[in-house]
Each structure stands twice: as structure tokens, then as C-alpha cells.
Image (cartoon, rainbow, N blue to C red; front, side, top):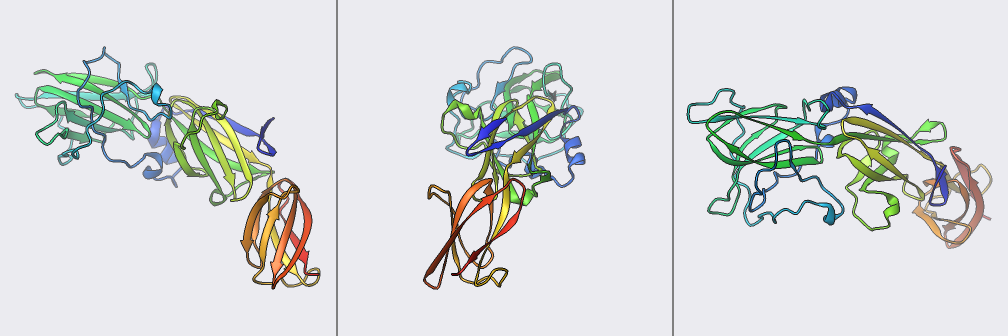
Length: 349
């Protein structure tokens, strides 16, 4: 049992092999769009000077990190001019006599299967042009493209969701094969209260890099993720901040994403949906234009609203509610039990 805020929670987690990659995820969860799986950002700009070619199988990881000290020591990217892109064409399978064929593959890990969908390949020239921009030579969305290029030096960049890697490549007059390792894993999050699943439109999640116990302030890697969405993340530890409603039902949980696996997480909230009414008589009609304030026993304001039937999601516990109508103030205390939705009437007397 773990404690989060003023209430307890449990989080369940299961990991499933992601050996069939993103195509299977889309087939399993047809409501998920590719935009939910992959961040739609502009093509990255390669570094100003490319490092010497690493040993076979190595790659320079460009995956996002909340800790700058953990990032590779790369030269600063050029931002003075936009990338000069060329139109996307289908990958040539046969090179002309003046060209070489670059065959590309990517895997979740050294001993894991190849990734068969969801990849974005970009090949750049290794030197900036007269405008200072690195020219985008080819872009390909196939899983294992074979790209015909003139012999020379290039930078190959590949991305899958939030995971990416880049490598300098030298093409000779014959064929070259390059394999990248992208340690990506899937993460699916849902919420539960009592014995019921929380509707996706009533709960949201923010995902942060690292553990909640590290004690450092950081921006969310993915803010406001809807329940049931599937994200592709770099392998590692993350913590989730789960918000049920917009009041005080907040749960924090550490999870670990594994390469090549889909991690299915269910976060339990201890809360209920409460409807407030100001009435002249018990069971009577609610009075309109009422201003509401929900407070803790210590006087801290949890939620404020205006209306005849405001609904608020509250963590289990004791509260006081204050209703203001036509210059008069009325109040009462009440208690919230986990998973027990209810209606609280305040008598205008």
C-alpha cells in the first residue's frame, strides 16, 4: 500500500511483449490515432560537426531526457536556418552505377526482434550548405528501407515515438547495411475508482521522467494524456501524476517501461462524485445562482463553483461546504466515501 497526498492508492501494472511493434498496437486499440502514438514535431537538425563513426551497432541517442547531464555530449545544433527538405519519394531498390544502396533496420534491443512499423527515417548531408542548413536528402517511413544514394558522407536519423537515434554513415560504391537499436516500450494507462473504471474523459495523466522521489522539479514529458491512450517511450523509469476530476483526487505512481513490451497500468483513486444543492426544504428544488466553496476541516479551499447543481470529484474524507445565495450564507459538513457517489443538500435556513 502506497500513500499519495491525503489518501491511499494502488496501481496495477502488467507488461506484455511488444514484439509486433506499433501495427499490433493500432490493431488492438483502433481508437488510437498515429498522432497519439508519435509526437508530430519538425525534423531534427543534425549537429554542426558529426562525430567520428562509432563502432558497428552503436548509435548516438537523441531521446529526450529531463536531466541535461545525462544527455550525450553533442555539438550544439544549428538553428539559424530551416532544414532544406526534398520531396519524399519511394525507396529505390536498385542503384544506378553511380549510386550505392543503404539498407536500414531498427530493433528494440540487441537480442530483440526488428521493429516492423512506425519508424521515420531521415538521411541528411553531413555538412551544412551555404545557408547553414543541413540538407534533408531522403525521408522514408518504411520499416526496412533500401535507399539509393551517391557515394559520400551522410547522417542517418531514425525515430519511433519519443525514441530516436542518429549515426554518421559513409557510403562507398557498393551496398551498406546499418542497424539501429531503439529501446522503446509502450505504455497504456487507465484509472479505477472502487470497482469501476473511470471514463477516459474524466481522468488525465501527466508523465514525468525519473522517480517522484528524486525531489527535483521538472516539466512533464507528456502532459494531459487521456485515459486509454498508448504512448511509445524510451526504456526507463517514469512517474505518473493522475488527476481524477479537477479538485483534489490526485495520485502519483512510479512505473518502469521496458523495451519491446507494452506496460498496462491501472491507477486506483479513492474518491467519489458529489453533487451539491441548495434547497429551501429537504428534497426541494435547487436554488439557482448559488456560489459554492468546498473546504477541508482545516479551512483549505478545495473547489469553488457557481450554479444550481455543481458536480465535484473529491477524495474520500471529511469536508465542509459553504453556499452563498442572495447575500445569505449557508453551510454544512459532509463525508465522502470511496466509490460512493452522492448528493449533498444544504438547507437555506
